[in-house]
Length: 118
Image (cartoon, rainbow, N blue to C red):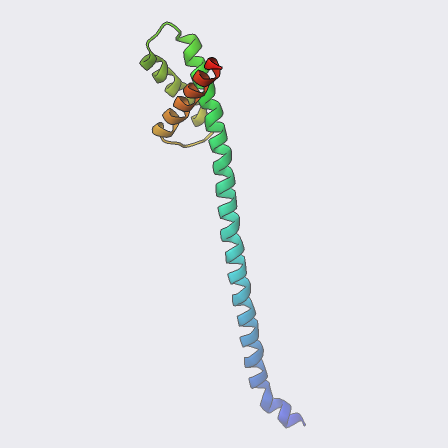
């Protein structure tokens, strides 16, 4: 019996090593898939929160420019609102393009115009 066990031991070791390797590969693939989904979730969630904050800051910027620079031309008000929003978003570590900031400020302006009409 002992010679049979000794003869089979290299084969058993090879089989066990292969099974452990296959399980490790499956586990690593699963961890990779979960990691990718987690990153996508956090990116989209963070992006949504940043978008929400962008629109809040744009509303503040519009209100600031409309009240502080009441007698100025619209272009001056827009420039001041852009500067305010850029500073506030920069302090919070949110990176968006100037076009996105302007679009958010324009949206805040249009929202305020609709509200005034009602």
